[in-house]
Length: 365
Image (cartoon, rainbow, N blue to C red):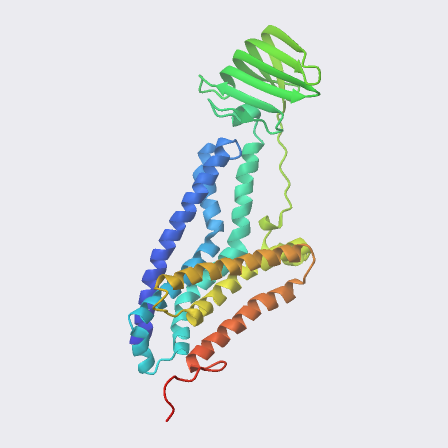
């Protein structure tokens, strides 16, 4: 049918363009954030793109929902401005007739959002956490990038190493600043290498100087050394245990229905339900006001989307603290918005008049 095909074709063009723009913006923002984390030693610099890919994949449900919302709003706004909606209305196609082709177009996107939210979201979180923990569990010397000051894993030391050898066990121009047991110590050395003694890792420094300062009395002691050993820690790295609900599968959350688990599950289910409601909201609320301009519809879409997702976050917080039941919250929020959107859609389809209407001005007959 010409009506269905023309509408879905225009929705497809608008959705594709919007998706490309939003993905580019999100990738740019996430790339800057990931590079900042790599610069302070939280992410392996060689794994920046991998972390970026997992992060963007985890945010894809939100990106797809916003792209779909903006695409429907922009398409209907253009059709209203070009008087195409008047033509369709005159030919017997009411506003409710647009719901079927719009839902047919949005069905694959809604399915993708559901799969990404319930299955892919926890997997990407666990992958990012695994990459970060694996890098953080490495020894201090391996984590230090040449030419940069980096804190150790415990935060009590600051390292600077200028490697002039391809081997990770050897470095030159070494600077170490430590603060522990009421003392501050600064050690500089020309060269250093790693040794393992009784399952403990030591940094052996050659030809350097050590300055120790008492924090309370500010007394200083300066010493020079030909060789100095600094313990770095155990060679065996323990696996980081994290019980964050964001990294657990949806089935695990259902099997252990604690407040924190139900809060995370409400967020994932809310992403899918919000995507469906956004489709109906865009169809029901979009109209063109000649005084406001065509951009008013896009501004409304952005504010409505932001408000909806803020309510999702607030509800997740309330459920996690036990202030409200998960089922009741989802019924009030998503069910309420669905009823309001469908009511507005039916009202506009039937051209209902709510309230009183001002009588026309002029002389009475």
